[in-house]
Every structure is written in structure tokens, then in C-alpha cells.
Length: 337
Length: 147
Image 1 (cartoon, each protein chain N blue to C red):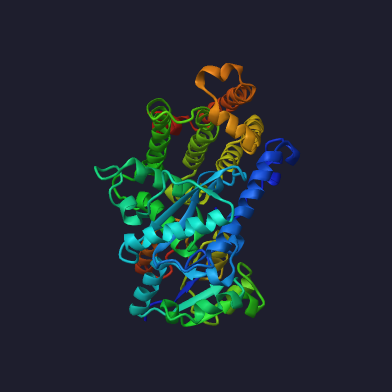
Image 2: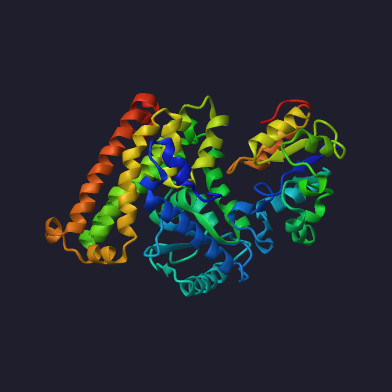
């Protein structure tokens, strides 16, 4: 992602007016402004050679609101930066960002990772859920916060890890496509563990799975089906590289439009806009965080968002049906089988 | 004599793009491209930078002690009065390098214009194995098309 996403230009492509997506527009503009503020602030510090800092999650997707937390990822190159230096750099970044008002999460991405660890053993015994998560999210929603030259080189190296293979790369970058699907399935299973085993709040997680996570997965399917229509790898790979980092909704709109189904995106955009609007309301988020599973049917916030998730599902299914019509062989062979 | 190689600056050698909030102090050479410049210089290639970036934004890069010292000539649209992909830009570039020189840019339209002007254009799309592509282009017979 090299520029702010312009939903005011994209929505008319699908038959909506900019006014039909107020929360999409607000989230995109607000996220970009927050991203720029963070970049400017972090540029005041000197960071270790070989280290890059990224925003992942809703800020990286340009879907954040002031109520969103920030997933911060620190990646470094072995040889240029040692792990201890990267460990010391992270809290400095966190302190600065918290002073700017960011709610920096200390969960999945709390420790710096070496780029070489993400590249070295894709699919092997040393590959972990953590590595998969970093790869999938850096490629699809990683927005640099500090050291952009290091960050771009790191993301290019990740993409290159899939394109440079000579035997397993296959046509259509199937190893990359499979890794993204693997991450999505991991997140779905991880929900069960977090909610049923660890006892974390379930409602917001469930609704994110049914909206933003599903949209992320759909966007990847659309992009790869779109790329499959290109004549050869020389056209396919630049297309995937150019759009893999687009916000997921933009990726869906661009891809489905290229496949002749732009209007199908309108209900998807409308329901996603409602979802982002709900997430931007801190009081609503708090109520959902406290909601017990047993009380869900009586809670108006949950019921409304659950119904929205049903509409979102229907819209996603219509898009999938379009992919089935226009890129059936690819969807069947690489998306399902 | 090894062919001259012309690089775009932002998106190929350095980051970030001006669209991404790029005050001068953020602008930096990519580590992988630093190694590439050193290797090509050691191979005897003449290295040039052809950029649409404001020259003053790149001043601190040009003055840096790193591998950008290996660059033999810098061409900035702001100083030439013409920008890529205008044909006039490539006419000016051809005053510095012979036809058939390798031209590398992350914008496809610039590559198309360069190829039309007689340069061997290589599109550095994000994520491309640029080192491998350059090596293949340099190994190809003179005049062979690149992409």
C-alpha cells in the first residue's frame, strides 16, 4: 500500500455514491492520517540498522478508528541488527506511539522477529503459526511505520520467497495462495481456542471473523482468480504484487470489476460500512466485549451486527458465485481442492 | 565494456514514495539495492539515476557515504524540465548513455517509453527478483527484449 485508498472513487464503480460509505471513508481517511502521524513521530528517533517497524491489523488495512488497537510488528535482518537491539527498540516505539494516543496491543506481535526466520523454512518443521501470521499479514496489510527502505526490502523479500522457488512455486503462485488460505484457517481455529479454552471475550472476535477476516480471505481468492485470467506468469505476478497490499475491500472491488461483476460489490460494501461504523463506537465495542454467549439473542447490538454478518455472507456468496462462473478452474483447483 | 545501467530512484533503489509522507529525512537506500549497486559497480558498469523526484529531496542521499557514491550521473526531471515518461526525458537521457543501455523503473509506463526510445527496459514491479532479472538481461544478447 503506497497511497491512501480512495473509496470515494471506488464506490461509484460498484453503483454506490460516496455518501453510501461514510464509515469506510472515515476509516480510510482517519487511518491514513494516523499512519502519517505515527510515521512522522517515529522518524524523530534513530532506529537500529536493519530494523523495520510495521502497523498490521485495521490500521494497516486503513480500516481503523480511534477505538481500534494497534498491532505493531518489528522485523529485523540478522547480521545487520541483533535480536537484543531489536528487543530494545520495540518499547521505544511503543512508548512514542502510546504518547500519540495509540492503544498498542502487547499480544501476538510482542517480540521482534528476524526476517530470515520468516523466509527460511516455509512449510517446514521450523515454520510456526507465528511465522505464518507475520508473513501473511506483512504481505497483505503491513504498513511501514519506521524505516521504509528496510520495510520495503523486507516485504519484497517475503514475496520473493514465493516467486523465486523453481520447483514448488507452480503457476499462479500457488504456494503463496496456500499460505494465505492456511493463515485464514488458522485464525478460524484459533478463535475456538481463545474463546472456549482461554475464555476470552467472544462477541467482537466472532463478528470480526464474520466480517473483516472473511473479507480478507475473499479478497485473496478474488485477487488470485483475477490473476489466473492473465496470459502468463509475467503478467500474473506483477498483478498480485501490485494489489496484495491493497485494503481487502479495494482488492475485491478492483478484482471483481476486472472480472465484470462490479455491481455485486455494492451489498458487500454496504454491510462492511455498517460493520466499521459499529466498530468505531467505543461504547458498543465495550458492550460487546462484556456480552455473554447466553445473552446474545437479547442484545440489540449483537443482533444487529449478527444480521449484518448474514447480509455480508450473502454478498460474499454472490461474489464467489461470480468467481465460480468466471474463474472456475482456478477456484476449484487452487481455492477448494 | 559492460553496459551502462540506469535506475529509477524511488521504488527501485530507495524508499519511501512521496505519496507515503516522505520528508527528506525518511528517504533511505534499500539494503538489498545497496549490495546490488556495489556488485554492479565492481563489475565495471556505469551507473546512473534517472528520477522524477525533486532533486533537493535526494540531496542527502547523494551526499551519503554509502553505495550511492557509485552513481556516475544523476538526472532529475526537475532539473531537466521534462519528466518520465515524456519522450523528451529519454532524449536527454540518451545524451548520457548509448541506446541499448539497461533502464530499470517501477512504473510500467516509464519502461514502455524507455523501450520506445531504444533502451532495454526492465520493469521493477514490487517483489520482483530484480537482481536475477538484471543478471538475465545483462546475459541476453544485445538488443534482446526485456520486460
